[in-house]
Image (cartoon, rainbow, N blue to C red):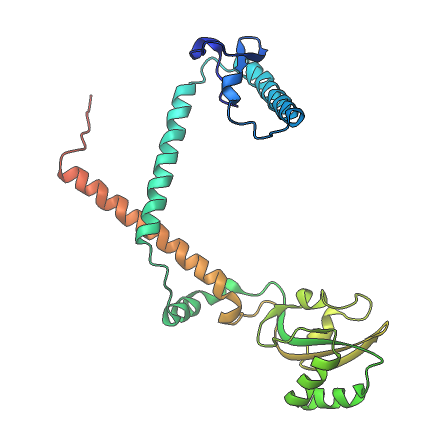
Length: 267
């Protein structure tokens, strides 16, 4: 619909119906033929009117833009530049899809991490922790806390399955403290609660909160590889893309030179 041209720029079908116009720009039924999917006559009319309104709104602005177009603006050149950019983008993307090595081994990860880890200093502290929420009227909750502090995994898990309303469970993942605080009520927990290893129990409303801080890495320290792995992998893949394209385009350029497909004409 947006591509409807001025009457002078296209051939009009015999019996075509003129639907709308903006000065020399005209919209015919053939421009939207096949676009109306409604089967009910009222729905079809509403859909048709919607297309017409959208076309009018676009072409009013387009008409003014054409009038105010700077005399020195070369539209054809802009179109050709855009076409060239699309061709290059699609060609490079196809090359990346076919040739890029996306496998990153553990050894490569570790080498890259050791070479660049100082670039990933933490902007905020991170920690490993487990958070469990249990209603304060749950039976034998004091015994649970004793088992919690003793790290009696079997007893802890059995009690949690029967009584907990929330369990973050995976305490092997690194998280920012702000992320962990998002699970907790604002009025009872602070950042400092997560800045030392150990067990915390606090009550809020009708819930008992149990937190086990397992490990901490302070702000401005080097993060573990596990915490920056995905970020690093993106950087590695990005660099491989650049290297692949540079190598391919340099080789292609040299091949064109050798086969005399490139000529430079000096005045």
